[in-house]
Length: 215
Image (cartoon, rainbow, N blue to C red; front, side, top):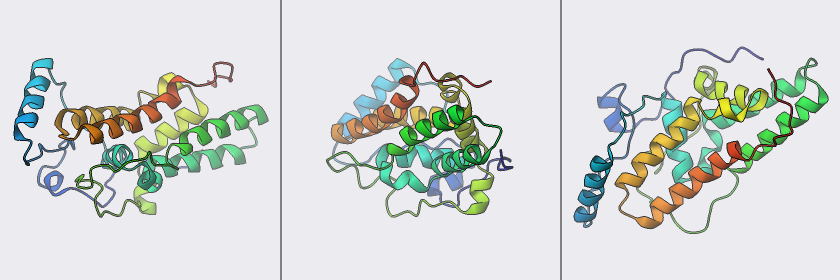
């Protein structure tokens, strides 16, 4: 594998709230519109259910999770997607990887990349704070330092689905979905984000059981 891994860094785009509170997990703020009663009810329900402690994710993971749930098509230039392609290229060029293993990695990569090629019908919330009017492309420097993204790519293409679901980008999607479902005042928007998350998670739970499990 090429030397792409190092400490995570920022992707250059941040929401103002995150810049004022470094290290704070990015979650959606409570909307302030005509649905105040619904938001308060949702918040109370979340408190009654007991919210887990926020998980601190690298900035590239936060951007990936937020963008995927709102607009999967715009997530094609985020670090986890680009890292997956880079890892696949390494595998295809590696003479020590068997043809069977390379084909298995390619099949997994295609399943992953297909998620980001289509948008479901119907509009989503255009005022999502992390996607509206933003440039989602990551620089070469930021991509090289996106260790969490490259870790997911390596484990998913070379390892097992069981290990891949414990990586930061996958956990980040679930964490962001948790916040979206609590604080979204639009049922349609919440359903859309849930659908996007399920599409991603389904990749890991429907993996070919007969494929070789690399050590």
